Image (cartoon, rainbow, N blue to C red; front, side, top):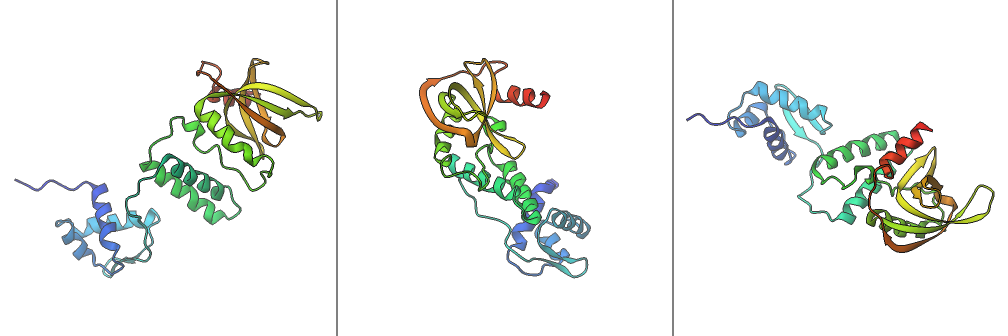
Length: 230
């Protein structure tokens, strides 16, 4: 009975595992280690790995070597750890170093391919802030985070454009960007409509202990569609 062919994804994974020893490997030796695939197949696979960004050096007739460690042992990440990872990647991706920004986006896509998807993809990394967040507003983040995740109504004190303090009962939907300003996307109960509250103008946040259910026309996706249309 003929031996079943190895899937290409499995073969690429095995190649990386072999190269992790940091030694020079000839294509013929790699082909034999993978169960007798052709040398031409190894050439194509190595080209694929190089194109993906793997720090592999070498060429046909010489051999291939992995210059730097590129894998981590299997890890189990908790929800908070995964969110911290997403926050860090978001900050680097929005940083001033274009090389690191590209690397962060590439790393995020690789992690996203193997990590569980968030319950609501629109909320995936809404808690990433630049360093411009003030010391006054930073303590509000945990409360906002819990309310958004738990779908809990909030009562907020807000400084409007006229410098007057107002109080609103809202359904917090997420944190979004308006140009370079972070805003709290919300459904305002009093106004019966979507509102974007500038984060730096929120004076206080008080949980009400009241939860809300998702309703058609009142969610984060509808908020963003409305903002895009305005």
